[in-house]
Length: 282
Image (tube, rainbow, N blue to C red; front, side):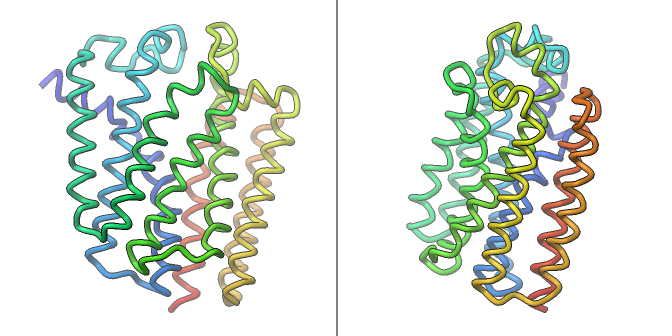
């Protein structure tokens, strides 16, 4: 039971915000690809896939960070550090989660299966990039956004060109909120040599986050223009703009707890965009 609890914590099932941040853009894509409510089987497969792949990403992240998490205030109590879970158990859990993901994607068409291999590669590479580049958040954004082309491929057997605007929107949004997350650990990361966009952006971090948030809204706006989406969608973007302004207020003093709250609040922005899309197709 001790190990099972540790595995639950290793998968961050007690902290579902990461699931939400991956879920909302997946639902954006499913609703747009289906021009409304997607088929139930596809919806269930993708929702379960979000939960499984987010868990797998957390496990491989902690495996990669097992030698440095003990030196970071926020991560010192993670299961691989405390001994709740052994390294062998963590690798077995990661393999089991990938197997579950494979079973799910095998229920979809072959084109989506091929795209899923890219998703696994991106999710597995992200944790190791923070040792070699200041842009691991870009890799996370690419991984978190890959469900978008997969959703279009699963529903329509192709990915329309305009769908890449949705990909760019989520990529920019992910880099923005993961930079907020990295700001929480910046002092620790500088001491142990871990790299991030928060370190790269330096004193211009809040400005760059604002730029990325504007890119997010601009790209979502392009989707709305190209598809002639109704007013309810544009209202959702206005609400998100207000949310981003609040994030800027939280970030201005770069205080750890405030930066973490800004990160947490991001999932509500994704939820509001999804509501706008649901309303657009009612």
